[in-house]
Amino acid sequence: MDVNTIGIVGTGQMATGIAEVTAKAGIKTIIRGRNADRAAASVDKIAKSLERAVDKGRATAEEKDATLGNLTATGHLGDLAQADLVIECLAEELDLKLATFRELEDVCPDNTILTSTTSSLSITEIAMATQRPTKVIGLHFFNPAPVMKLVEIVPTLLTDEDLVEGARKLCEQLGKVPVVARDRAGFIVNALLFPYLNHAARMLEAGYASREDIDAAMMNGCGHPMGPLQLLDLVGNDVSLEIVESLYKEFRDPFLAPAPLLKQMVAAGLLGRKTGRGFYDYSK
Image (tube, rainbow, N blue to C red):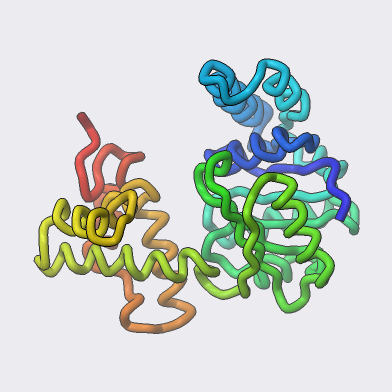
């Protein structure tokens, strides 16, 4: 798999982080936003991130300039026709992803590889929105992408076998640690992590212990860098609920049923750090 140019669909935190990673690796990277201004703002965020790295001695000015030279911003999906591989980094909404892949099908050459960063949706269902399901694969990066080493590679039953190996080599080129997972809800990490996080919300709701003691127990008893309720707030309770619901929908295990407290918090807009309040108050 010869990848000289990568297209990024999206301008959010994940999309911007992945674009920084690919550009740093010397790969020409095209960021496609909803409009040109959003795409340009994504490049500006990368420039600020690189400037901080230079100030802290983690990168040189020459490396910063080389990375920025690999970046192009656009508001036109058709500009991704020149990409060898496209990474879709949009919200976890299946209809949105399906529509995007149908558009990519129309503008990208038949040999372009199409990938999704979804953390919980079916890669198979996304692939079948195209006429090239053998050229579709999941590449689940973790947030923040410039820091987190892991990438879950998720082939479907139809994905070309050599594409899996090509994806592994690409991840290694990007400085990441690739693992291959079956196309099942949650893949590896989230299938293990979110039942634990969901159960922490159930424990709090049932009065087992305070939020502080639940988090302190897992940090000091299991060596976790962050407690489960703190982590839910960091991920976002809305995103967490979507992942838990996808696990429950696929496996129908009663243990995976979303905690009522988690659903109530999402309904109340208590989404965590991004809204200033979740299990904890971040407004101060």
